[in-house]
Image (cartoon, rainbow, N blue to C red; front, side):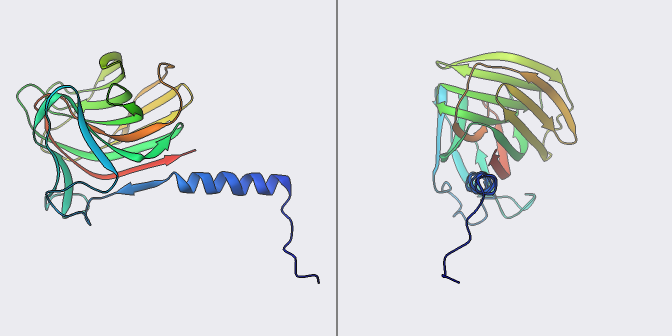
Length: 212
């Protein structure tokens, strides 16, 4: 015995590296350790277009993991809030959301491959329209990829999940997959986060993400 460590085979080393990379890019936020009235660490909020969105952690005893949620209560063209420290090219993003109010919209959604406030993907559900939509935003312009009818009850919690790999995108709401397609408009790694539209007052909880 010379005290040296056993060497890994090239295959074992590749698997170990892949597992480490996946673990490093997986995580989540339930907002329960964040002081109400503030934002979670490493989260940045803004708006695509114009407006004055108001993103804050607040208390809601109805939250899936109470007591806290992330809430948008202002208004803007497309308010967003992202975890800038995360960069994922392929993987998933998931959140629970509750549309509370809004005359123009009652929407909640997910962002991924977020490069900046003018370039990213969105999947969203709207309680006023009862549909699920997929968009890409380029140079500040939101462009529809596809939308389908779906029941989205107001003032109730819903679960949305997006899986994305290369050009493949799958969007689920609650227990149903509503969209599965290929789109190549935005590639490469980007941040992940949540999104609303117009005057939507929306709460978010149990945000999670992972990279391949």
